[in-house]
Length: 378
Length: 97
Image 1 (cartoon, rainbow over the protein chains, first blue to last red):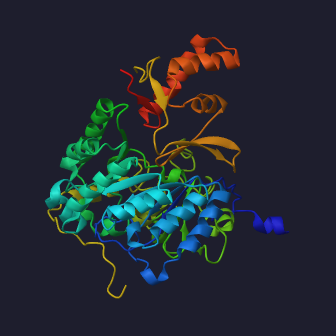
Image 2 (spheres, one colour; image 1 turned 60 degrees about the horizontal axis):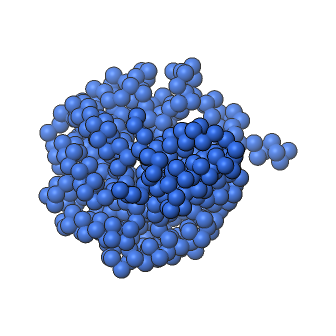
Image 3 (cartoon, rainbow over the protein chains, first blue to last red; image 1 turned 45 degrees about the horizontal axis):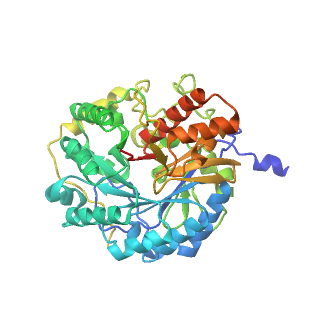
């Protein structure tokens, strides 16, 4: 009987077979000195007093490694906002994980970066909001951010960390993409991630100010294609295109609950960082249940595993094991139904409406942002 | 595609890239910035040879002797495998000129 009760099932009750996760995103805090209007944190931010401690993170990392996780991405908010970041990093390395530090570079001094080096950070990913102070500081909502970032990048190189630049692009900075790639080259980055804003959470509130035009989306692809040829063997370019203008949706998370998981500041475990936008879904917490049980047995992780839960047109689509029906959170946001075919897919009945909406947003004249900030009292 | 490594070049794993046991899956993996690559026996054998001292040529002849295989064939496999990793910036080449 126990076996029957323990059989993982999707949201329709079909049996599913969980695989093993490779990577874990650890959002150790939602506190951040920046206020980027496309922040990937949820709109309801977790406050400092609800954050779990460094020793809790140590336990989570050991459970993650036992579960098959090989890499942890320590992120935030700004992970540097945690005074015990080096301790958290040390726990991750002790657990045998490869440690990627995902940072804005703001609020980490050179001495602290050296401490993080000793604690075992393997690789640093530095975010880029724009090029030059005027653009970068306005988008990040943080005066002085550009200068601090460039100083931080120098320390990264001096210490010798491998560096990735993460350039988030949208309507207000897309023209400067060639300069962002040139900057990454000049900083000696091994990789640059060119990520078009994904319209969840905060970014969704700022659609009219951020949505790229179709021409810009095409321009970005061309710039990336050319740079990949020119920089072959010198710098890797990972590209997240504007999916509102694509034919097929992105294979979000490589399939729900298949290879990655996200643990938030208070220990909430999510199948992806935007999953809380699916309001009816209940998520579990590492303070109450082991990571292994959550991964294998929780309703949230099993909900969209496999392909049996898919409606048409996904169910009979030959790409259902390629893009897995696209992004559940985008389906929630645009179709009002988390199990719907991702509405950006050309096979979705909502596609024309989505494209029309994107073009309307792209044509908007507003440049003003609703910045990502914690409500007072946090 | 032109290969990104010549016979006399010395390949090595740069900082931030390391070979590691994946104890859960019982295989070896190459850990690199935001990427863990599962290795088969051939990949593992090649990467285990990278010591930052020997050239690709020397590594090929050592592998050919150990596995009693034709050096020509091994040279092609090693060059293609390493070129792929150089392209992904997971293997670096020492400047020997």
